[in-house]
Image (cartoon, rainbow, N blue to C red):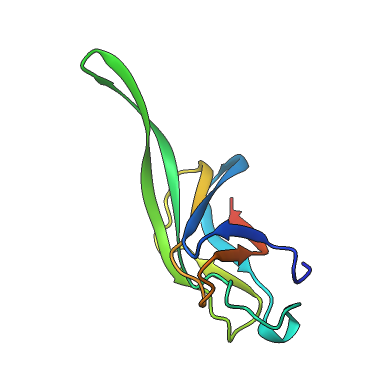
Length: 128
């Protein structure tokens, strides 16, 4: 990854829904952001701080004679990206599920101080 080429989120709180190429039984997620010393601007305040990972499953049910579609969200873990550690950090999921999913949601709840945006350089989903 190259410092300065990130995936920016508007505001310090945001989310991304990642569609997986196949159904995956998840066991960890890796998030990447450069360290302060290797950052192009010498500032890592846009790095994610607190984030959650969840999966969504299609939810289809009959309500008053009409098919209603929606999603059921299951939290897989709450994590903190530590800017004092290495730039690539892997987080074992706290709530491993026995079934496989087509998508995962990464929700950034805070960053390290940048009020206008949060940046992620790479996200990797680990599973079988």
